[in-house]
Length: 55
Image (cartoon, rainbow, N blue to C red; front, side, top):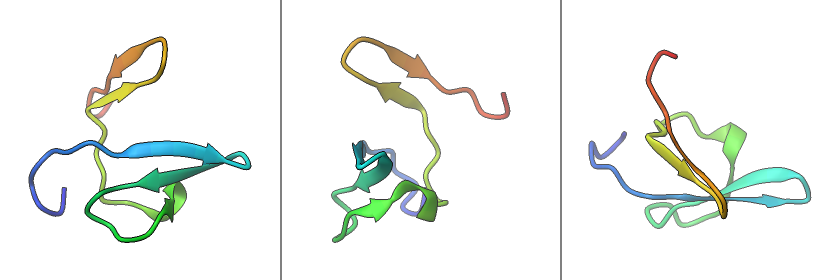
């Protein structure tokens, strides 16, 4: 949301903690430390979800 342009990030679980990999950030960050993302789609190896704001 900072750049007003959508892009993909990767969330990977490391020792049970969700970690965010973003090509616009130079370090890997714990997911609970980030507040400026707004999910639109989530995808895993078997399914995908569309997130709806305010639901």
